[in-house]
Length: 114
Image (cartoon, rainbow, N blue to C red; front, side, top):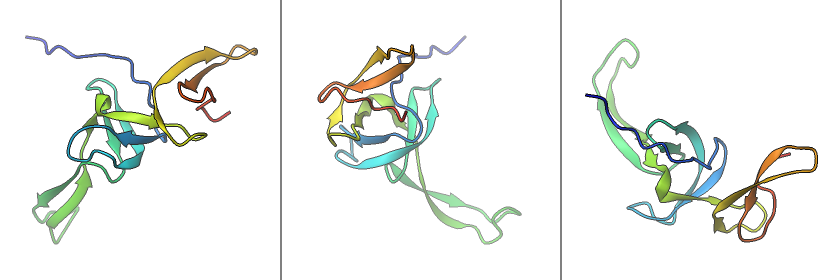
């Protein structure tokens, strides 16, 4: 049996600043380290930090308790606009030269780095 995958549009890219809007880390901000589009998840710096117990191995000879970020669902975060500093939704537009860019819904500024 095949697993159904929710493939909604992910409007957030690697390197964007995002703010968590729900869950135990509500209000925290961080930079997107990695996207997992097949699961609609994001890995965000300093958000959803979990402890992982590891045994001694060749890679980690002493073992111990590691703290690392776990993925968080993309629906729980909003993009932080670099111009106005607000958490905002994202729209798309085309420039005169034909490039597709992301726009802030609150202030109308371009979010993408040109």
